[in-house]
Image (cartoon, rainbow, N blue to C red; front, side, top):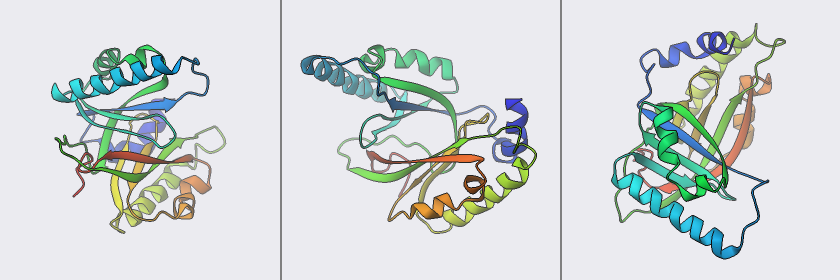
Length: 215
């Protein structure tokens, strides 16, 4: 069922990229994580940052950045989600179950992932995540509405404020990363959002400038 929905909605976007070149990881903030002594949390985070640096030096981790309020993202150079899950197990923060982890194939249509060397400047962008909400009551209208969604995204991209537009394959939705001022109403007016086929989440992402291949 999930595969059928995906083929109906997203096949035009990924026919040239069935095998991902990149894997995207969400480190989602947990509200139920264990309360640990401050010194232990500090040690875990120091190990987390050191592991990020090591993975980057090894050419595995291309981009990484935190969200305001906790959590963050990784973008790995890999064709295998299973391989990336193994790499993640070297992270003390992952070992300590500090985040809810999602590992997804990554298909950027605008932007990408570019390694940035020190010294680099951290910058912030608006991060919009789309998650699909397909059910029996709306599946018949899904192809038509998602075509409108694709057309709507093209108009947003024309503004020049889109750093990244990407999907995650299957029916896992996608993301927009944008610069400048963001009117949330513009995103919420998307036909697929209004019709309830997509749900949106807004966050602020901090990342090294150039890490998303932006100029």
